[in-house]
Length: 297
Image 1 (cartoon, rainbow, N blue to C red):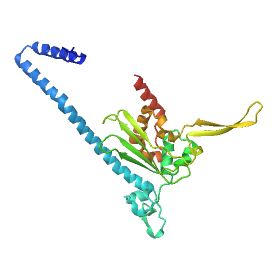
Image 2: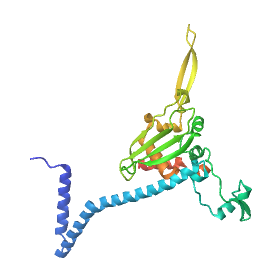
Image 3: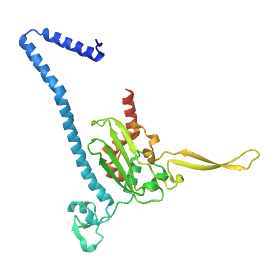
Image 4: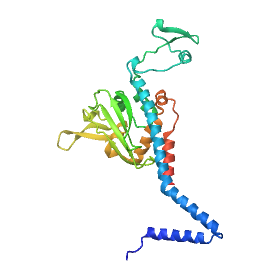
């Protein structure tokens, strides 16, 4: 006969405790009500909670889809080169309040005492993403990073179909002198739909045109004189903190990646205009220290 497992012993003990409590109820009608209440609570455990998670999941997905729809409009406004690409709705008060001046006198009209443009002429917002990332102060962005990020012209948030809340970020670059990739991506996979912990991350490999152009490395040459020999040149490679560390698989840390994923999803992308304008006031050092304190407790 197989020995009863620890889990089975605990269940038997709980059942015995429950039965004893029911037996000790004074009135048979109270016993019946208690048994019926137990029957209902069991239904909650087996049916309601999974359904609740399912409904919650649907609500989260719907909110995410709404976010993506609006964010895609924002992206188009940032990168558009033609007025017809985007239809921006502004009121007369908007034009007057901010004194949006017309480039064509024939299009001017008097609003709020100022000559304003009735139909703005759009162009791309230069260096929008690089400025926003630098202003966020969330990443280690060195001087070489800034040069490379000036060719970043789009960031796309892509949900992984059928695997909510997993998502991928695509960073689209113009052709540049640093690497051959036009798209660099990173995927964040959560353990479950509660998105409270990451299970894995996948990053693109960056194809640098030359090793010396990699901003995560500092390469120096040092001449060393050996006894009885001429000077030899030694190449020294040193790691340098960089924005592009987030794409280095050997540096992946799921706790850091989790904070990074939530920053992109819940903070940077929804508030990207505020970051571009540099009007966000968030101390990430305090956030990280409070998170580490909560982990320790």
